Length: 338
Image 1: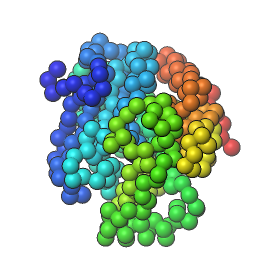
Image 2: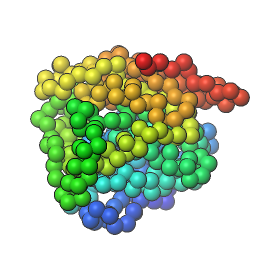
Image 3: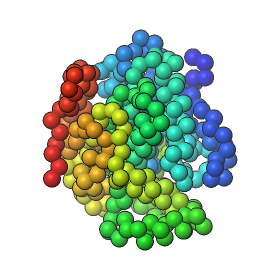
Image 4: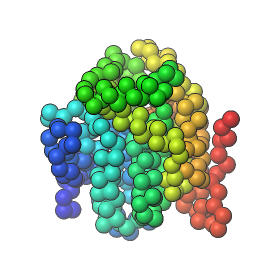
């Protein structure tokens, strides 16, 4: 139990990783690894979950589901996020997504020490972009070690909005502004929207810390969005994460409005057509599955859509745990994008 202490979630444990001074000048950085229950030295497999923007690990229903399928469950609150945010730091702020590599590697090392099990990496939204880029860098540096699969839940693969936002002149302007005024806010928190469909104090089913995950989101800064844009541009040139991967997303996007009833069924955060367009850039052996009426986080959707998401997850996990070890591996029949 060295280094572990009780987490804010009952039955969970956490440990922190000291990461040294912040290159962006906001003090000392720490990341927090969360584990479900006691260590499982005999575990045959493990999962490492990475959250998105304005998010942190709290979905114990998802953790329980993985555990019921034989996975030792871990989740990482990235530096400046959730449990890892420290006084004086801008929540979720970084100017380089590659800076997350150190804490991701530390998490893998910890899992290897506790169980030695192969790890299935899970990333949601911006976390899906972060882990995809990380795995591509790992594969390029050395043969894949310790990671055997990837699940992406509504990964953020392009900058939503008008096409002009994705042009070279706009990217150059972001770069120039990001260097001079990297903490300039380009989007302020909303007064509701997607968050109101999630939390039980509003129109949702789930309970979580509204300081760590505000209903209206955190401000979006120039430096952070430029880091995201650089990562997406790299992804668009094509990655190879080196492992089989499953991409889950909603079957439709809805415009984010204040009325939660109007956005309970659909992705109110990302353009799902962009996810469909760029999913093929993640790597080989990809299964892409749209979930009817799912929200941005498919595992926080209305009950019937959530059940569909779990069913598709189980279908892929069955293949992942058995069939893909065959001589000519092929994932479950993917949804063909046109």
